[in-house]
Image (cartoon, rainbow, N blue to C red; front, side, top):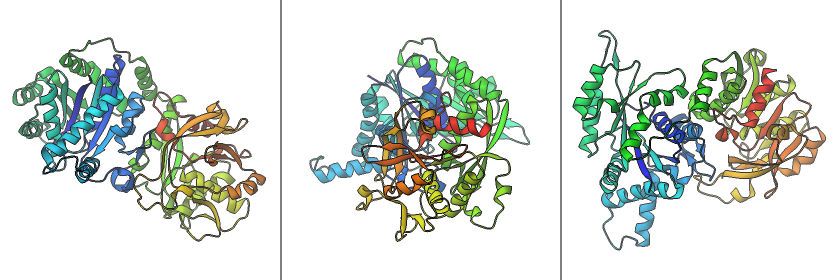
Length: 531
């Protein structure tokens, strides 16, 4: 039977609960235990798939095609395990499931209520993750902050799980803020005390408190928290501000956080193997070079909208002991009369990531033209690949009205068109082409040099595709279609061999990149940019 760790947050949002959960998972995995992770989000949206990137950051896609919260990206990058549909549960999913059961008559005429019906559904989601993953330990992060109305049903469900499974099978981690008051130059524990009081009022006594603060708490402050929060002093874990988030698991390890959890579970505290992670930290703390990469997007005001892309660039940089400085460029601004030579003056590579809608598209195309004509390494992802094809069709093949039906449904030259199985879809949520699909890579191409294999599997999130009617004319002018999904005859990868490094992919390689194992396409892109 799986053991369950629950991570909650108090005082303020944005404390880094996701990093805390990921760090604990990494440490437990390093001791030889199978770990699975999930996130409970209190919003009523069924999933983040239809939410604005400006509000919620990127939508992370799992291998099985689930559109999830960006915290799952942290989870996968830290523990290097593929997560699935059981890993991101929202209030919307819970209520949808309960209402569907009520309509079917599953509740046999009972009055459907928050307790027990909603809470039972939440508990089922926790237990399902443990059963389907066959994990030794399941770590569940609860979104939001203790005291939020939205998360009360989740907290009540966790209280019931503790009651059902016992302390020997459940562990509560509560992350709080210990603010530093300038002027008096003091750290204040009162917010933590009140947060724990709030949590206790909902029936949960934390087993560990993770204190986020700019400096390490002294023994006096830890003793104070221990006294008022009824917790052993050694179970208060410092989470000080760090420049490198990959240092956090090691900081927790030095304080014995994972050992405390295992002891409560009655599990053997085996020797941890953190050599690979320690090597990563040594590399990231001693980067020898630096390089600027231009990221041209339509959501750059919120960098979290491109979180996995930014992390993937950094991962590739680590391999070459290079710090990646991202030049965040708003594509809409490029549509004005700007000097592109000045904009990209210091950029050694240009990347155009995914996105939806017409806004800022012509600015992206201008950036792609600049990269192609000036032989600057280019990587296009999803929309970035589609626009690279449109740009090539317009400026190399002289198809002046080349466009996508996403931007102009009546365009006479639909180089990019709606996928055939998408044409009669009404609901927008969860209906894109999502998750893992196979791709056959052509030998003798840049893509094959990158992957070094003919068969790959990558994650997708798109509704439009390259129109194969234009394949011959683009081939005649020098474009190579180096990756194909043979089952649907879908173009997956394009490249221009005459260029130093010009490649685009319909899928999202950023979702498979890891800090200790960068993705081949990002590896190749950064390597070329460094030259």
